[in-house]
Image (cartoon, rainbow, N blue to C red; front, side):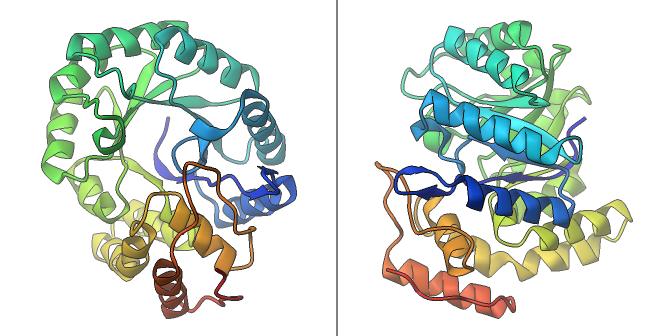
Amino acid sequence: MFKGIFTALVTPLKNNTVDISALGHLVDRQIKAKVQGLVVCATTGEGAVLNADERQMVIDFIKKRIGDKTKLIVGISDIATWKAGESANIAANLGADGVLVAAPSYVKPSQDGLYAHYASIADQSPVPVILYNVPSRTVSDIKPVTVARLAPHENIVAIKEATGSLERAQKIIAAANGNLNILSGDDPATVSILVAGGHGVISTGANVVPSKWTDLWQHWKHGDVVAAATVQAGLLGLHEALFLESNPGPAKAALNLLGLIEPEIRLPLTWPSRPTTFRLAAELENLGLSVKGRTR
C-alpha cells in the first residue's frame, strides 16, 4: 500500500500559529511533483509541539486539499499506548490513509513492551499502521526480532527504519519476511535500501526538492538504478546541510530561503544558526534554485 516517495511535510508557522496559506502552497507543490504521499504532524512537522486543535486543523486542511490525489499519513508520537490508539482513531476520522507511530520515548519499554504497544494500537486503529524506528530520538529501538513478531499483524503494513544503518535495514527486511514494506528514514540510504528490497522513503529533503525525489523514484521503477543513484548523489550536499542541526530547523530554513514559509519554529527547537543557513543557501544555489534572501 505504501511505496514510493512520502514527504515528511513541515508545518509552517506565523506569529506562533499554523500558517494555513503557506501550508496550502507547500501541499500544492508536493502534489505538482507527484509524490506518493504526505506524512504530516510527525518529526519534521513538529507534531509533538502542536496542540490537539492545531493537529486536527492541519490534518483536516491537508486532506481536503489533496482529496484522493495522494496518500495522507499522520504521525503519532504519544508515549501512552491508550493515547496513541486514540490519536489513530482521530486521524482516521479526519481522512488519514495510515498512521506513522513512533516508538515511545522516555519510558524505555522492553521489546515485549514495544510488541504489546504496537499490537494494541494496530488492533484499535481503523487505518493501517506504520512502525517508526528512530532510536536516536526516542531511545527505544524496535529490534528485528520484534519486527518479525509484529509483521504478521494484518493492520501493520510498513516500517520507517531510521537508524541510518544499511545492515539494520537488511536485517529488518529479512525479519519482515515480505509482510511489511520497508521505508527508508534516512535520505542518503534510500537507493541502497531499495536495492536491498525496500519500498521507498519518508523524506525530509523532499520538502525542498520534491521533483528530484519523484525523478529518483521514476528511475527506480523503470529499472535504472544508476540514474536513481545519480539523483541521490546530487542531493548529498543538501542532505548534509539539512541535518547540521536538529530537524526540522534546517528544512524550514531552506524553505524560508526559497520564499515559501516564514522563519519560525516552535520551542524547544530554535532557528538554525547563520553558518547553517549560509550553507543551506549555498546548497540550494548549487541545485540551481533561486534563493530569496539569507535571513537571520
